[in-house]
Amino acid sequence: MALSRIRIPSLPALAAYAADLAAALRPGDVVTLSGPLGVGKTALVKALARSLGITDEVISPTFVYQQTYRLPTDSSIRALTHLDLYRLTSDADVTALGLVTEDPTGVVVIEWPERAPTLASRATLQLTWTFAPDGSRDLTSEWRRP
Image 1 (tube, one colour):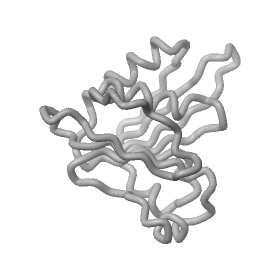
Image 2 (cartoon, rainbow, N blue to C red):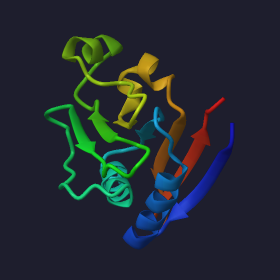
Image 3 (cartoon, rainbow, N blue to C red):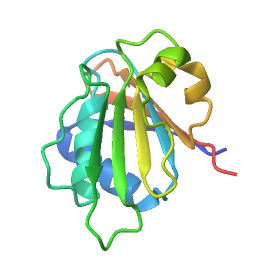
Image 4 (spheres, rainbow, N blue to C red):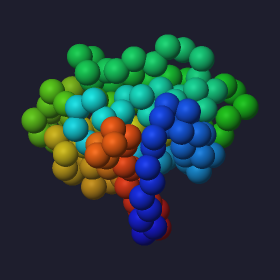
């Protein structure tokens, strides 16, 4: 398990981080994004989608819970599935709604994973965001691949 911490001072820095992340992801990865409202979780998903070659508009799925975006056919990752669990209360809600929680040919990114702890435990990458005193963001990442 590799743990690292970085500071994200700006949107261009976020885009650069997303590009590095896109290069490191593999089909089947599950990424969790934790942190307070407004810290930049959805902004990271948007930047990640752009880095993966997705040209569709990426929106927060807060009210629909899930959005799936197809990647270009020349990518080894076939889809990016974005879940926002903010309005859920348990793992049972995830099951009841039939949300996609694993995709062996794609990547699943989950905002608010603490709302579904069993699901969160399957993450191959955990990202935790905090506000830094200067207004930038601190990001702690932990890879959990075997």
